[in-house]
Image (tube, rainbow, N blue to C red):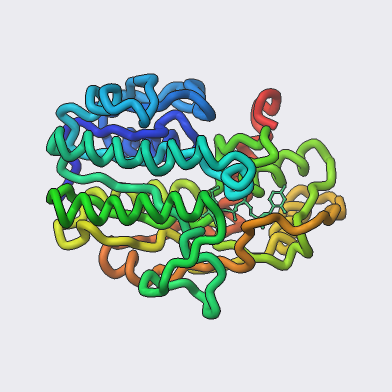
Length: 319
Ligand code: UD2
């Protein structure tokens, strides 16, 4: 069923949210609300996108969320405080935003009779599994507050469907990267940090031996899947899908690839492993391909080149 009318993206001024809004606008959607408290999101991420309005508000504020989602057909719930290590150092804010805030979003969407809610879940829910790739049927085993919080959001998504009939779909994002990912915090995604280091010609610090692996997924592929999840028939409601490519690369491989693209040699520094870190991550994308029509377009090399080009263009302020 296609998206008809108003669309709300919580976290819409953030890295993935603004990428999703750009894809929606490219598909012709013109009634888009970016709901964001601008804690890490930036108005500049939405610059030049037609048909989008920014509503500044916090997902913990039920009234503000209710006002934003009134009359919406589809809500993409991406607002969160991400980062495994941040959730270990500061568990209270991430608990309040990722669990309480998510509850308020589902509650407001139910009351507003929103047709479909797509929830940004996380691959971190799997923890360390004995087998790769990771399949939705595996028992979750969160290793950090962040992972537990995102998993709780999935449970709420499924319960809002089974108890109240709100059509939710949870997509477990696998290490999303691409343009507009902010590298400025130690809690930033590793590829934004790697890109920033590369362009500044500074060696990055790799936590551990660098042989941990991730299913790095380009932001446009994730955005495309979010839209497919919003448009799929009612049979997908209440379900959880992996939103990864199905590949995995070690940090050492990715840092090597970036140096090759840039034509430089900058050996990385190595530091202690990070608490709560998952060792290996790789999605089994079979279910998302079969039931949502997931069709990732970007190889890691293509995604890295595009990302690097974005950081390079108008470099100041980005790295
Ligand atoms: C987790 C989830 C991901 C998403 C994300 C949101 C897993 C496998 N993935 O990402 O799906 O929900 O959380 O925050 O749980 N690292 C370095 N040097 C740095 C920064 C990071 O070596 O300067 C390492 C880090 O220790 C880890 C890897 O890079 O092994 C990836 O870290 P990240 O913070 O980019 O993402 P991750 O895997 O915690």
